[in-house]
Length: 307
Image 1: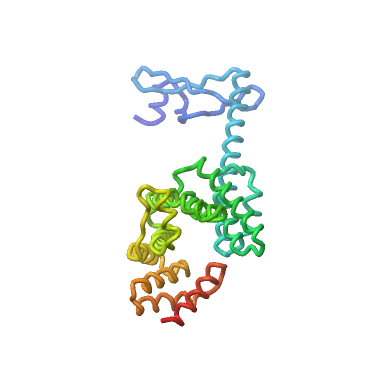
Image 2 (image 1 turned 90 degrees about the vertical axis):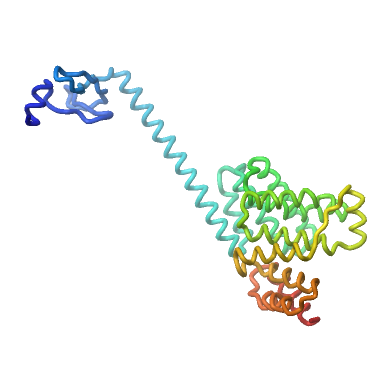
């Protein structure tokens, strides 16, 4: 049977396409139509058009237009956020911290957790180069407030937990030794949670190593404070700290000059001078791009003179 014969048998001059269609009107315009399906005598399902009422047509067009505008607006906002975050992250990697804040502050939704934790990171990083003590304290307090807000909105973001641990410690330091020591357990919890969410982040492994190292060489008076606060005081060892620094280095070699410095200090504490010298030389010869690099270079240079 030919196609023409099949069409004739079905009593229809053409086969309709699936979906929404348009048909001509007497005024030579087109309006939406719906497909009205019937079964012909040969048992084949066919489709006929039924014109929509004019009121329904107007409503249909209005709803469709509104939906398109809403979807387009949402997509534009998502693209805008992505571009804002990419720009901010690149500026942060280039150590332009004030520019990071400027870019993020222009985004419409300042309550976004993604915006807040990045601003907290930038404020904290700016605090390291603050010349006045009051300015440094102000920046750290701003950073702490923002990272708290970000954590309230999103507690499943590894970066937020990581920066909470960093900023929390800096904020507690402003309030004295007792305040800082009292935050140790909570700080450790945020580091651990960050690693649970992303075990391949080298910076978080470095943080855990720094935490272990700090506990391992805790001064006597601070140990007394720790013992008074905690029923079971947290402890750390140089061996555990070194494992963390080496883990971080294995994930991303040379990612942080301070990681070389701390690994070298661990080897020195373990009386392994050859290995210590290897890492300290890397830190002493690092390219200085920010305050951390500057401090690592200076300290490593001084330690090498004593070996």
